[in-house]
Image (cartoon, rainbow, N blue to C red; front, side):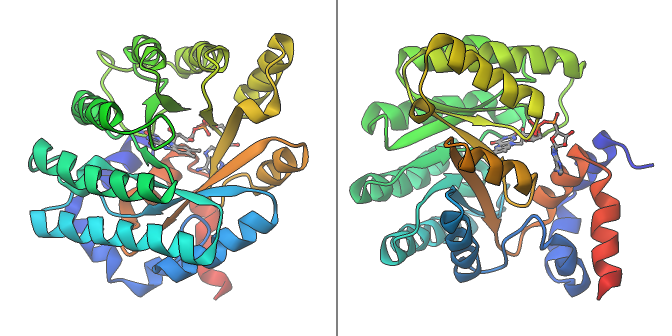
Length: 306
Ligand SMILES: Cc1cc2nc3c(=O)[nH]c(=O)nc-3n(C[C@H](O)[C@H](O)[C@H](O)COP(=O)(O)OP(=O)(O)OC[C@H]3O[C@@H](n4cnc5c(N)ncnc54)[C@H](O)[C@@H]3O)c2cc1C
Protein backbone atom coordinates (compact mmCIF):
# COMPACT_ATOMS: atom_id res chain seq x y z
CA UNK A 1 0.00 0.00 0.00
CA UNK A 2 1.40 3.42 -0.93
CA UNK A 3 1.71 5.57 2.16
CA UNK A 4 1.15 9.33 2.43
CA UNK A 5 4.88 10.03 2.65
CA UNK A 6 5.70 7.76 -0.34
CA UNK A 7 3.12 9.59 -2.45
CA UNK A 8 4.46 12.98 -1.35
CA UNK A 9 8.02 11.78 -2.09
CA UNK A 10 6.92 10.80 -5.62
CA UNK A 11 5.19 14.19 -6.01
CA UNK A 12 8.61 15.88 -5.71
CA UNK A 13 10.20 13.79 -8.47
CA UNK A 14 11.10 16.38 -11.11
CA UNK A 15 11.60 13.80 -13.86
CA UNK A 16 8.11 12.41 -13.34
CA UNK A 17 6.67 15.95 -13.44
CA UNK A 18 7.78 16.39 -17.08
CA UNK A 19 7.09 12.80 -18.06
CA UNK A 20 3.52 12.96 -16.74
CA UNK A 21 2.81 16.24 -18.55
CA UNK A 22 3.32 14.50 -21.89
CA UNK A 23 1.61 11.21 -21.13
CA UNK A 24 -1.99 11.41 -22.31
CA UNK A 25 -3.34 8.42 -20.38
CA UNK A 26 -2.34 10.16 -17.15
CA UNK A 27 -4.33 13.23 -18.14
CA UNK A 28 -7.52 11.22 -17.88
CA UNK A 29 -6.71 10.47 -14.25
CA UNK A 30 -6.68 14.05 -13.23
CA UNK A 31 -10.02 15.37 -14.42
CA UNK A 32 -11.55 15.03 -10.98
CA UNK A 33 -9.04 17.37 -9.34
CA UNK A 34 -7.75 19.53 -12.22
CA UNK A 35 -10.08 21.74 -14.25
CA UNK A 36 -8.20 21.25 -17.55
CA UNK A 37 -5.04 22.31 -19.31
CA UNK A 38 -6.09 25.79 -20.44
CA UNK A 39 -7.36 29.02 -18.89
CA UNK A 40 -10.58 28.69 -20.87
CA UNK A 41 -11.30 25.23 -19.41
CA UNK A 42 -10.75 26.63 -15.93
CA UNK A 43 -13.07 29.56 -16.70
CA UNK A 44 -15.80 27.10 -17.76
CA UNK A 45 -15.37 25.20 -14.47
CA UNK A 46 -15.48 28.45 -12.48
CA UNK A 47 -18.68 29.55 -14.23
CA UNK A 48 -20.33 26.33 -13.02
CA UNK A 49 -19.07 26.91 -9.49
CA UNK A 50 -20.26 30.52 -9.55
CA UNK A 51 -23.70 29.30 -10.65
CA UNK A 52 -23.76 27.08 -7.52
CA UNK A 53 -23.02 30.09 -5.32
CA UNK A 54 -19.27 29.45 -4.91
CA UNK A 55 -16.43 31.86 -5.69
CA UNK A 56 -13.05 30.57 -6.90
CA UNK A 57 -9.31 30.98 -6.76
CA UNK A 58 -7.43 30.35 -10.01
CA UNK A 59 -4.22 28.34 -9.76
CA UNK A 60 -1.91 27.80 -12.72
CA UNK A 61 -0.16 24.54 -11.95
CA UNK A 62 3.60 24.78 -11.98
CA UNK A 63 6.05 24.84 -9.11
CA UNK A 64 9.82 24.83 -8.61
CA UNK A 65 10.53 26.35 -12.02
CA UNK A 66 14.00 25.67 -13.44
CA UNK A 67 14.89 29.01 -15.06
CA UNK A 68 14.11 32.75 -14.92
CA UNK A 69 12.51 32.41 -18.37
CA UNK A 70 10.09 29.77 -17.03
CA UNK A 71 9.26 32.11 -14.12
CA UNK A 72 8.62 34.97 -16.58
CA UNK A 73 6.20 32.75 -18.49
CA UNK A 74 4.32 32.14 -15.21
CA UNK A 75 4.00 35.89 -14.64
CA UNK A 76 2.58 36.31 -18.16
CA UNK A 77 0.12 33.48 -17.53
CA UNK A 78 -1.15 35.15 -14.33
CA UNK A 79 -1.48 38.55 -16.04
CA UNK A 80 -3.55 36.82 -18.69
CA UNK A 81 -5.70 35.12 -16.01
CA UNK A 82 -6.38 38.47 -14.33
CA UNK A 83 -7.34 39.97 -17.67
CA UNK A 84 -9.68 37.06 -18.48
CA UNK A 85 -11.32 37.29 -15.03
CA UNK A 86 -12.20 40.90 -15.79
CA UNK A 87 -13.32 40.16 -19.35
CA UNK A 88 -15.57 37.25 -18.36
CA UNK A 89 -16.85 38.76 -15.11
CA UNK A 90 -16.35 35.49 -13.19
CA UNK A 91 -16.06 35.62 -9.42
CA UNK A 92 -12.47 34.54 -8.81
CA UNK A 93 -9.19 35.69 -7.33
CA UNK A 94 -5.80 34.02 -7.94
CA UNK A 95 -3.42 31.83 -5.95
CA UNK A 96 0.31 31.83 -6.69
CA UNK A 97 3.30 29.79 -5.51
CA UNK A 98 6.55 31.69 -5.06
CA UNK A 99 8.59 28.71 -6.31
CA UNK A 100 6.64 29.15 -9.52
CA UNK A 101 8.05 32.67 -9.73
CA UNK A 102 11.63 31.56 -9.08
CA UNK A 103 11.96 31.36 -5.26
CA UNK A 104 14.26 28.33 -5.58
CA UNK A 105 16.51 30.24 -7.99
CA UNK A 106 16.66 33.70 -6.41
CA UNK A 107 14.32 35.22 -3.79
CA UNK A 108 14.67 38.71 -5.37
CA UNK A 109 13.45 37.33 -8.68
CA UNK A 110 10.45 35.72 -6.97
CA UNK A 111 9.67 38.99 -5.16
CA UNK A 112 9.83 41.05 -8.36
CA UNK A 113 7.65 38.55 -10.24
CA UNK A 114 5.07 38.32 -7.45
CA UNK A 115 5.06 42.12 -7.20
CA UNK A 116 4.19 42.44 -10.90
CA UNK A 117 1.18 40.15 -10.44
CA UNK A 118 0.02 41.75 -7.18
CA UNK A 119 0.30 45.25 -8.71
CA UNK A 120 -1.87 44.19 -11.64
CA UNK A 121 -4.43 42.51 -9.35
CA UNK A 122 -4.55 45.60 -7.09
CA UNK A 123 -5.10 47.86 -10.11
CA UNK A 124 -8.03 45.65 -11.12
CA UNK A 125 -9.49 45.41 -7.61
CA UNK A 126 -8.65 41.69 -7.42
CA UNK A 127 -6.72 39.72 -4.79
CA UNK A 128 -3.63 37.47 -4.81
CA UNK A 129 -3.20 34.64 -2.33
CA UNK A 130 0.38 33.47 -1.79
CA UNK A 131 0.23 29.70 -1.24
CA UNK A 132 2.56 28.12 1.31
CA UNK A 133 4.95 25.38 0.18
CA UNK A 134 7.42 23.06 1.96
CA UNK A 135 9.21 24.26 5.12
CA UNK A 136 12.43 25.07 3.17
CA UNK A 137 10.42 27.99 1.82
CA UNK A 138 8.33 29.03 4.85
CA UNK A 139 10.51 31.90 6.06
CA UNK A 140 11.36 33.23 2.60
CA UNK A 141 7.68 33.12 1.62
CA UNK A 142 6.70 35.05 4.76
CA UNK A 143 9.50 37.59 4.17
CA UNK A 144 8.40 38.25 0.59
CA UNK A 145 4.75 38.39 1.61
CA UNK A 146 5.55 41.03 4.25
CA UNK A 147 7.33 43.18 1.66
CA UNK A 148 4.33 42.90 -0.65
CA UNK A 149 1.89 43.63 2.15
CA UNK A 150 3.90 46.74 3.16
CA UNK A 151 3.43 48.04 -0.36
CA UNK A 152 -0.10 46.86 -1.14
CA UNK A 153 -3.38 46.81 0.77
CA UNK A 154 -5.03 44.26 3.05
CA UNK A 155 -7.44 43.37 0.26
CA UNK A 156 -4.75 43.09 -2.43
CA UNK A 157 -2.59 40.26 -1.12
CA UNK A 158 -2.83 37.51 1.52
CA UNK A 159 -0.87 34.46 2.65
CA UNK A 160 -1.36 30.82 3.71
CA UNK A 161 -0.32 29.24 7.01
CA UNK A 162 -0.23 25.48 7.75
CA UNK A 163 -1.43 24.15 11.10
CA UNK A 164 0.95 21.16 11.04
CA UNK A 165 3.90 23.52 11.54
CA UNK A 166 4.95 24.17 15.14
CA UNK A 167 5.70 27.83 14.35
CA UNK A 168 2.27 28.60 12.87
CA UNK A 169 0.38 29.91 15.91
CA UNK A 170 3.10 32.53 16.47
CA UNK A 171 3.09 33.37 12.75
CA UNK A 172 -0.70 33.79 12.85
CA UNK A 173 -0.42 36.20 15.81
CA UNK A 174 2.21 38.17 13.91
CA UNK A 175 0.12 38.29 10.71
CA UNK A 176 -3.03 39.41 12.51
CA UNK A 177 -1.05 42.31 13.99
CA UNK A 178 0.11 43.52 10.54
CA UNK A 179 -2.90 43.09 9.69
CA UNK A 180 -2.96 40.43 6.94
CA UNK A 181 -5.51 38.08 5.44
CA UNK A 182 -4.67 34.44 6.07
CA UNK A 183 -5.80 31.14 4.62
CA UNK A 184 -5.35 28.48 7.28
CA UNK A 185 -4.92 24.89 6.04
CA UNK A 186 -3.43 21.76 7.60
CA UNK A 187 -0.42 21.48 5.23
CA UNK A 188 0.31 19.12 2.36
CA UNK A 189 4.07 18.38 2.40
CA UNK A 190 6.36 15.87 4.11
CA UNK A 191 7.92 17.62 7.09
CA UNK A 192 10.34 16.41 9.79
CA UNK A 193 9.14 16.27 13.43
CA UNK A 194 11.42 19.17 14.38
CA UNK A 195 9.25 21.55 12.37
CA UNK A 196 5.85 19.82 12.13
CA UNK A 197 3.62 17.84 14.48
CA UNK A 198 4.01 14.15 13.63
CA UNK A 199 0.62 13.43 15.19
CA UNK A 200 -2.51 14.43 13.23
CA UNK A 201 -4.32 15.12 16.52
CA UNK A 202 -1.89 17.97 17.29
CA UNK A 203 -2.27 19.40 13.78
CA UNK A 204 -6.05 19.40 14.22
CA UNK A 205 -5.86 21.01 17.69
CA UNK A 206 -3.54 23.68 16.33
CA UNK A 207 -5.90 24.25 13.39
CA UNK A 208 -8.74 25.00 15.79
CA UNK A 209 -6.60 27.35 17.92
CA UNK A 210 -5.48 29.28 14.84
CA UNK A 211 -9.02 29.33 13.39
CA UNK A 212 -10.29 30.88 16.65
CA UNK A 213 -7.53 33.49 16.63
CA UNK A 214 -8.35 34.38 13.03
CA UNK A 215 -12.10 34.58 13.47
CA UNK A 216 -11.71 36.78 16.54
CA UNK A 217 -9.36 39.18 14.70
CA UNK A 218 -12.13 40.92 12.77
CA UNK A 219 -10.16 40.43 9.52
CA UNK A 220 -11.65 38.47 6.60
CA UNK A 221 -9.79 35.10 6.52
CA UNK A 222 -10.09 31.79 4.65
CA UNK A 223 -10.78 28.57 6.54
CA UNK A 224 -9.49 25.92 4.11
CA UNK A 225 -10.42 22.33 4.91
CA UNK A 226 -12.61 19.39 3.89
CA UNK A 227 -12.61 18.03 7.40
CA UNK A 228 -16.16 18.08 8.84
CA UNK A 229 -14.68 18.34 12.38
CA UNK A 230 -12.81 21.55 11.49
CA UNK A 231 -15.88 22.95 9.71
CA UNK A 232 -18.19 22.18 12.63
CA UNK A 233 -15.69 23.71 15.06
CA UNK A 234 -15.58 26.87 12.93
CA UNK A 235 -19.36 27.19 12.69
CA UNK A 236 -19.73 26.49 16.38
CA UNK A 237 -17.09 29.06 17.37
CA UNK A 238 -18.54 31.73 15.06
CA UNK A 239 -22.04 31.15 16.48
CA UNK A 240 -20.85 31.30 20.08
CA UNK A 241 -18.90 34.52 19.45
CA UNK A 242 -21.65 36.14 17.42
CA UNK A 243 -19.40 36.28 14.33
CA UNK A 244 -21.51 36.59 11.17
CA UNK A 245 -21.29 34.33 8.10
CA UNK A 246 -20.07 37.28 6.03
CA UNK A 247 -16.99 37.73 8.24
CA UNK A 248 -14.99 34.76 6.82
CA UNK A 249 -15.01 32.19 4.04
CA UNK A 250 -14.62 28.44 3.80
CA UNK A 251 -12.30 27.17 1.09
CA UNK A 252 -12.03 23.74 -0.55
CA UNK A 253 -10.19 22.17 -3.46
CA UNK A 254 -11.78 21.57 -6.84
CA UNK A 255 -13.34 18.10 -6.94
CA UNK A 256 -12.98 17.36 -3.21
CA UNK A 257 -16.17 16.97 -1.13
CA UNK A 258 -18.39 18.66 -3.73
CA UNK A 259 -21.42 17.70 -1.64
CA UNK A 260 -20.11 19.66 1.32
CA UNK A 261 -19.12 22.62 -0.90
CA UNK A 262 -22.68 22.91 -2.20
CA UNK A 263 -24.22 22.40 1.23
CA UNK A 264 -22.18 25.17 2.87
CA UNK A 265 -22.95 27.57 0.00
CA UNK A 266 -26.65 26.70 0.35
CA UNK A 267 -26.46 27.34 4.09
CA UNK A 268 -25.31 30.87 3.32
CA UNK A 269 -21.58 30.53 4.00
CA UNK A 270 -19.01 32.13 1.71
CA UNK A 271 -17.47 29.17 -0.13
CA UNK A 272 -14.39 29.54 -2.34
CA UNK A 273 -13.05 26.73 -4.51
CA UNK A 274 -9.38 26.47 -5.46
CA UNK A 275 -9.36 25.69 -9.17
CA UNK A 276 -6.08 24.38 -10.58
CA UNK A 277 -5.39 23.99 -14.29
CA UNK A 278 -2.38 23.47 -16.54
CA UNK A 279 0.01 20.87 -17.89
CA UNK A 280 2.15 20.52 -14.77
CA UNK A 281 -0.49 18.80 -12.69
CA UNK A 282 1.69 15.97 -11.44
CA UNK A 283 2.94 17.22 -8.00
CA UNK A 284 -0.45 18.74 -7.13
CA UNK A 285 -2.28 15.58 -8.14
CA UNK A 286 0.06 13.34 -6.11
CA UNK A 287 -0.46 15.48 -3.00
CA UNK A 288 -4.23 14.99 -3.40
CA UNK A 289 -3.74 11.22 -3.57
CA UNK A 290 -1.52 11.41 -0.50
CA UNK A 291 -4.30 13.11 1.48
CA UNK A 292 -6.64 10.27 0.74
CA UNK A 293 -5.01 7.15 -0.73
CA UNK A 294 -8.54 5.78 -1.39
CA UNK A 295 -8.57 8.28 -4.28
CA UNK A 296 -6.14 5.99 -6.11
CA UNK A 297 -9.02 3.53 -6.61
CA UNK A 298 -11.30 6.33 -7.66
CA UNK A 299 -8.96 7.42 -10.46
CA UNK A 300 -8.23 3.81 -11.54
CA UNK A 301 -11.97 3.27 -12.01
CA UNK A 302 -12.06 6.41 -14.20
CA UNK A 303 -9.40 5.05 -16.57
CA UNK A 304 -11.21 1.78 -17.09
CA UNK A 305 -14.54 3.53 -17.65
CA UNK A 306 -12.90 4.76 -20.92
C1 LIG B 1 -8.46 25.94 -0.66
C2 LIG B 1 -7.26 25.16 -0.20
C3 LIG B 1 -5.98 25.69 -0.39
C4 LIG B 1 -4.88 24.98 0.07
N1 LIG B 1 -3.64 25.57 -0.01
C5 LIG B 1 -2.57 24.95 0.52
C6 LIG B 1 -1.29 25.58 0.60
O1 LIG B 1 -1.11 26.73 0.19
N2 LIG B 1 -0.27 24.89 1.16
C7 LIG B 1 -0.44 23.61 1.66
O2 LIG B 1 0.51 23.03 2.18
N3 LIG B 1 -1.63 22.99 1.59
C8 LIG B 1 -2.70 23.63 1.04
N4 LIG B 1 -3.90 22.99 1.02
C9 LIG B 1 -4.01 21.54 1.33
C10 LIG B 1 -4.18 21.32 2.81
O3 LIG B 1 -3.02 21.66 3.50
C11 LIG B 1 -4.51 19.84 3.12
O4 LIG B 1 -3.48 19.03 2.62
C12 LIG B 1 -5.81 19.37 2.52
O5 LIG B 1 -6.80 20.37 2.55
C13 LIG B 1 -6.34 18.15 3.29
O6 LIG B 1 -6.60 18.52 4.61
P1 LIG B 1 -8.08 18.65 5.23
O7 LIG B 1 -8.12 19.89 6.02
O8 LIG B 1 -9.06 18.58 4.14
O9 LIG B 1 -8.20 17.48 6.27
P2 LIG B 1 -7.81 15.94 6.28
O10 LIG B 1 -7.68 15.59 7.70
O11 LIG B 1 -6.66 15.64 5.35
O12 LIG B 1 -9.09 15.27 5.66
C14 LIG B 1 -10.35 15.31 6.29
C15 LIG B 1 -11.40 14.67 5.41
O13 LIG B 1 -11.55 15.46 4.23
C16 LIG B 1 -11.72 14.63 3.09
N5 LIG B 1 -10.57 14.81 2.17
C17 LIG B 1 -9.41 15.46 2.43
N6 LIG B 1 -8.59 15.46 1.36
C18 LIG B 1 -9.24 14.78 0.41
C19 LIG B 1 -8.91 14.45 -0.93
N7 LIG B 1 -7.75 14.80 -1.50
N8 LIG B 1 -9.83 13.73 -1.63
C20 LIG B 1 -11.02 13.39 -1.08
N9 LIG B 1 -11.38 13.68 0.19
C21 LIG B 1 -10.51 14.37 0.92
C22 LIG B 1 -11.82 13.24 3.59
O14 LIG B 1 -13.18 12.97 3.87
C23 LIG B 1 -11.02 13.29 4.88
O15 LIG B 1 -11.41 12.31 5.80
C24 LIG B 1 -5.04 23.69 0.63
C25 LIG B 1 -6.31 23.18 0.82
C26 LIG B 1 -7.42 23.88 0.43
C27 LIG B 1 -8.77 23.32 0.70
